[in-house]
Image 1 (cartoon, rainbow, N blue to C red):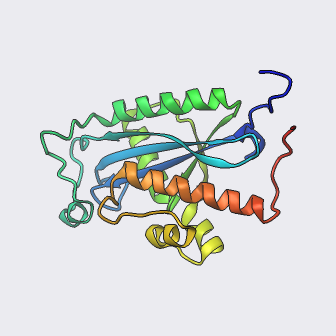
Image 2: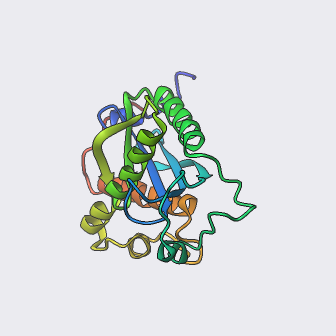
Length: 214
């Protein structure tokens, strides 16, 4: 880096050492302890030198239902997922989480953060399924804070008066295709855009941001 270049803005300076990671899951129902995890996606976000946040990359997996998992037909009709489709290329929960966590831990290290914090639209739902899968798989290194989350449904209600993801994105000027919705990767990306837009809007309105050197 030359002396004229601004140093990279690290997210750790904005979120008290935490790395926000947007998570979306698609499931076979509403009960994390009994219902199948069918898709999981994580979208990483990064910060520019002026403090502007934007989505960076998305990692997603189709997941094989765990043995004995409950799958509600209504859930499949809502998401359009066929869990037994031969071209899903689904992997076991343990592989999906291990690979996902590997990416997240690498980003934590690169951004100088202490650990990740889950961002989700109705975040406790996504966190519940992640934590239940972690417990089922016996994984010891969960990179996420155990109980704190950023919920974009709440943030969007404050910023735009909307709590439904599609409507909140509409108010924020973010394109949202209902035909592509209820895919974990698509919803994670749109949620990440919404989260970044709210953080950036807060900054532009004079809200607190860390000081970055020119």
